[in-house]
Image (tube, rainbow, N blue to C red; front, side, top):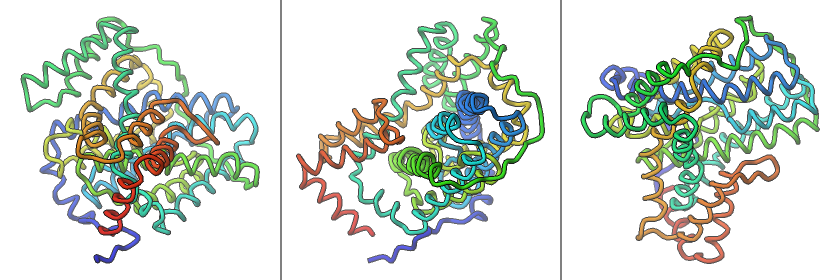
Length: 418
């Protein structure tokens, strides 16, 4: 039996840097750009809106944005180069919504202390190796069904955008499939973005962003540690990072044929959570949807080179964090229909792989996989934890009841490879 270390080894940063130039091309750069635009647009509004509702100053808001975007970019660059996998860093979007709501009951000082404690929880779970063992034990069909259910909203969002902005969304969709048919050089998702953006300009739909933060220096806030904030913010936020973002990213990478370093992803997410808290942000961790974009076939046919998309994304993300106060209004001027359409189109390959790996005829745990799909597609939220986590719990529970043999077979296979 091969001895497994807690912190997974990889090719190393030197190897990642050495091979990076030959993997940088239009497809990897295009996927990295699309992922960055996705992460720097709508999700930023959640943070800005939460900061405004919580009475934060512009300096505190910019510090929050700097923490999560700059550190998220560093996570992308570090993990992509070390493991030569498209492991993309950002922050938890549901976590931002959770924090936005909690600011009505807690001071920002208490919230900062809770952010740091949440990062510490994630770090301890990572160094224990527990998360890695759990993720390797989970039956693949259930994990893949969770991924399909969690990401299907991006595909349906692209369809919904046709109703709200038919010319912009329609132009992007047509460009995507025509580009897929006529050329292998230009990534279809980049064609969709360019054509959609031209249509948006023609329609006069670019401009008028809702964010109006001027460029100001970040204002850092001293943490205050309280038990109430720990229970109300730290524990749910830590579970969101592990059970939603990291679990999604892990499943996506597995679906694309990678062997993700689960323990290191958890450890880095914990360190990112503590560091982001010290800088004034709610967490910096592995991003599920952005990892899906950078690891998809839109980043090129060569899976070994897709990590270059994450490096491009990391550079753009980190730069956005450095100039957040001035950059947010520019990105917010892009129409939401365009961003939603392009993000949905970028998910097609990931969703196809997830469905195939969840419901193939030769696979077991089919009932549990269907339950995981249904729960992940829902808007379920219990104990402050969103649907993807409960999808895994429900899928395993149902498999244990109705298909215990297939579940035990998955466990034996996991032990055999540990």
